[in-house]
Length: 242
Image (tube, rainbow, N blue to C red; front, side):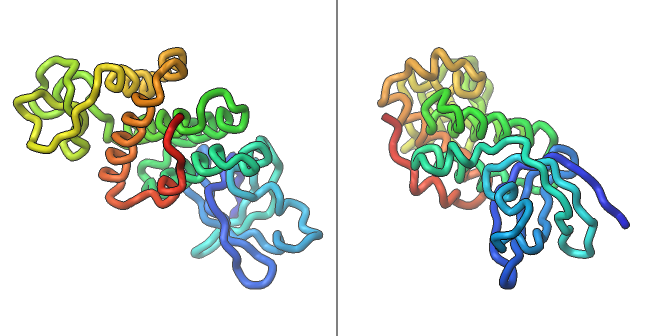
């Protein structure tokens, strides 16, 4: 029988029939996987709890015609237990999982898997503000997908920065000459914070003011949703950074 194993992060699930679930997962080696987990909604299921959103598992699957079938699942990281009870962590994790689910197969690389894994781990441990973890993930996931924002030089003409205008449709910051009417103007602290979020400079991120955090979150949300070409529903449930 054509079976294979992989490490996965569970992105979402939905019911199938009376006892089964369809599980959407981002894997380390096989990109996105949609598979049927049979009987997991029964209380006697051996691995139902290991296939909930935000869980990390080592799974064995049978290759099906349209959907694969989960045969085994061993827990590698029970991050959902620490994420789900906390509203801010849960909504941030939901937005991250939803974004990962939007990736096409060509973009679902091992680097994407590791990025999501690291983000969920940080959320579960409460290492940084939940919205900051999400913002950093969104900037990095866009970069890995080929949409790296320009945060120093002008995205349109290449003039060296830093610049004080941000236009998602043009690819990031732009100079005063290239900035269209109505462009968002960003304060120097916001620009520094955007660069720190992309680079993972958490000392700078954690020390940022509430105003800069809120401004950067708005810009990042607009940038990500523009390039994904559709809204991220989970973002509407996030509270403003404090």
